[in-house]
Structure formats: structure tokens, C-alpha cells
Image (cartoon, rainbow, N blue to C red; front, side, top):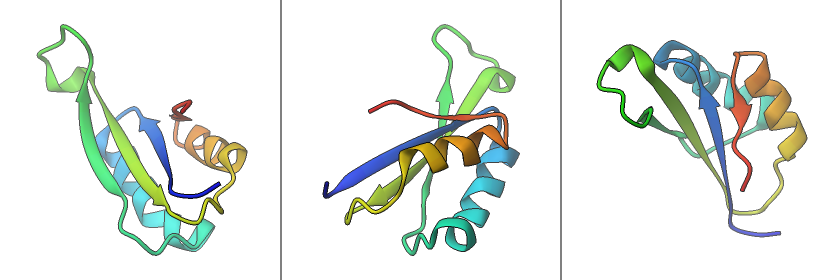
Length: 81
């Protein structure tokens, strides 16, 4: 596996920022993850937005199950590829 990308879906910006801050310590991620606001379909209210944490994994070394468990600690999940 090479050049993988993982997307963690989090319930709000605070959770996404916490996850992004913890990634280097928990998983040794060296590239800054990308935070993306993902408004739910048909919703204009910012409160109804999920946040995505996009992690580049060029060597394919990150374990999807571990990332999913990590996201779950913050009430989120790993988006299936």
C-alpha cells in the first residue's frame, strides 16, 4: 500500500483540532493534517457541520482500525475509502 489518504470525520471543529494535535504523538504523523469543514447536505447552519481531518499517508503505514478507534474516542469515525 502506498500513497494512502485517511479521512477522519469529527462532530465539530474542537474535536477535529484535538485530533490533529494528537496525531503526531499517537501515530507519528509528520505532515500537518488538513482540517476541512463539511456542511451536511441541505444544512446552512454552521452547527450542523462535521469536520474532516485529512491525513496523508504516503508510505501506507497507518493502521485504519487504530485510526477508527482514535476517532471514536472523539465521537468520530474513519471514513471508508
